[in-house]
Amino acid sequence: MKKEKDWFDSPNIITYLIIGLLILLIILSQSFAIQNHLGASDMLRSIFNHNSEYIFPLIYFILIRMKIGKKYFDHLNLIMTLLYFLLTVASIFTIFQSFHFGTILVFVRNLLFLLYFVYAFLCDTVIGKDLHLANSPMVEVKNNQYFYVIGIVLIIYLIVSLINSSSFDGVVLILLEMMYYFLFARYIYLYKEFCDQKIKDVKKPKKSTKKESVIE
Image (cartoon, rainbow, N blue to C red; front, side, top):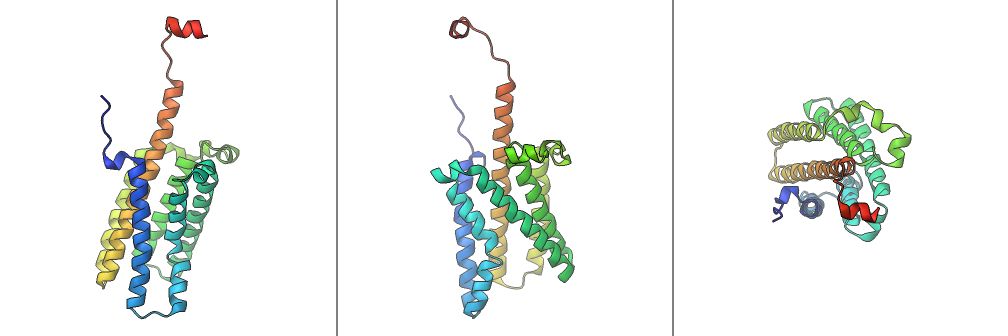
């Protein structure tokens, strides 16, 4: 009898939870902006700056649940890689503008997600092979090591953010954001585990049987 998966080992459940969290993050961040009497221009700036970090992943996760997303899965992964590259570059400039432990942690978080995403989703693609990503130092790190390091960084960032937060609204958004990032890391981990298992199954020698020899 096949053992039923726990929810954190199910890519489908993880994906739907991420979609729900991202929608909630976007709605709450805008509603809090309205409560704080921010103008229309400020809210639009919030959507296209801070919330773009949530909007594009939301589109990504919705699309991969559809046929078109499955068809262009590698293209969507490339777009997500570009997004995290831009977020990483932006976080470098943020460090120069406001140098403190929180901005350093944001940079480390974005850089780790960029490397982890490339490691899991692009290394075995045509683009990854053209760029010789399989020969890069990033593949020396194991899947579970990436996951645990990101988890530690997220916990540290959560503690620092909660200490620095001065409002209830901020605490709610921080907690939701951390839940999203933990689930996102879990999604990457599960995909890499799936790919590694496929490679093991291909390399595993098949037992020869009379039936197989007749087919051959």
